[in-house]
Structures are given as structure tokens and as C-alpha cells.
Amino acid sequence: MDPQSINTFAKQFLKTKQPLDILIESAGIMFAPLKRDSRGNESQLSTNYLGHFQLTQCLYPALKAAKGSRIVIVTSRAQSWNGIDFNDPNFLKRTYTAYAQSKVADILMTKEFNQRSQADGIAFFAVHPGLVPGTGLGRFLVDSQSFQKMNAFFMNNLQFTRLISLKNSIVAKFHGQKEYDYFKTVSQGAASVLWAATSPLLTNMGGVFIEDNNIGTIVPNDSTSKFGVRQWSIDPLAARKLWYLGNQLIKKNVN
Image (cartoon, rainbow, N blue to C red):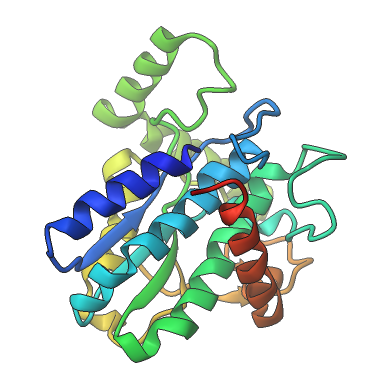
């Protein structure tokens, strides 16, 4: 949320004259109370999208120098909830859908950036890592840090995620449902991110949405499926419009 820290880091990296082969942008907050950054932008839009948008632009010379770099932007299933509200992107009137909007923005950023950077050999990928409960992402839902640490230990080290997923699969089968929520450890959640960053199968495939180590399917906006990317998340017109809005928001009161 601090634009100056982003600029400082990028300048320090560019001074090394090193090419940047892989950039993974996974900073994220979820269901945070209403808060704004120094530029007046809503905190989830600022952290989950604008910070990545600004950092990528700052580091672009190093990405271009790599001649084949990849940028992985971590999104979420929340992209299926709602699209971008261009009339109130900073939530001056309501806050409920802020997290989902920021994650839609990440995918739209992937689409537009990839379109603009193909000539420079740079590929962008949007990745949904899955449902990973053993992290600090839900810290605004639970106040106790001790509980968060305990939860992370049980979910990751003891792999309680398997038991939860098994229970959900049994319930789904009992009700005749084809889909159910399956949870992942941090390592399992990282798998799709690393696949997007390194797999030769994705050569010349930039701009796609990835989940479960595969290219995700495109589904209608009103789909009830737990999976797949919604059309409002890949709409080229919305992606272009967001590009201009993003530039406007990050340049506001920024040196």
C-alpha cells in the first residue's frame, strides 16, 4: 500500500542491471475493514491490484532484458462473485465486494499487460492457487494470532486439509453434487503458481487463467460452478479500461 516503498525497491533492483526472469506477485489481504492508502485508494484494491500494477511497470526494463520473462499474478475464486465497478472502484458507497473486485482486477491486468508486452517476449499468467486455509490471508476474520498459528500447523503440517476435503466429497456425493470444496496445504497451493512460472507447456500461452496446474475453463458470469474463470474477468474492453484507471490511480499524489 506504500507507493514510495515500491518505487524504492524497483530503483534498487534496476541499479543491479540484472534481468528479471520470474516475478511472482502474491501480496493479498481479504475482507479487511474499510481503509485507504495514502492516495485514497481502498486497501484491498491497493494491496491486491494497484501494488502489483505499479511494481510491474517499475520493473519492466528488467523484465524486458530477460528476453522471455514470466509474471505470475495470484488471483482467487472470488473473481466469480462480481466484476469491476468502474463507477465506484474505490468503494465510496459500499465495501462488501471489494475483495472480489481486486481479484478480478488481477486477471484483467494479466490480459492487458500480456497483450501489450508480447513484442518484448514477456508473458503474464493469472493463477488461482486453490482454497488454502493455513495462511495469514484470513487474519481479518480471526483476531487471535495464536489461533492463526495453530490453524496453520494443523492444516499444513498435519494436513487436516485432507480430512476436510474428504468430508466435503462425501457430503457432495450424498447430495448428488459433482463439485465440492477441496482444500490445500501451502505447498499444494504453491504448485500452480510454480507451474505457471516455469512450465515449458505454457510457452507462448501468456494471458491465461490457471487453476489446479491447468489452464482454466471459461464459464458464463452466472455459472454456479466453483471453478472456471468468469467472462467479466477476461473481457478485453474491461481490461483496457482498467489499464487506464490503474494508471490514473497509481499516479495520483505519487512522485
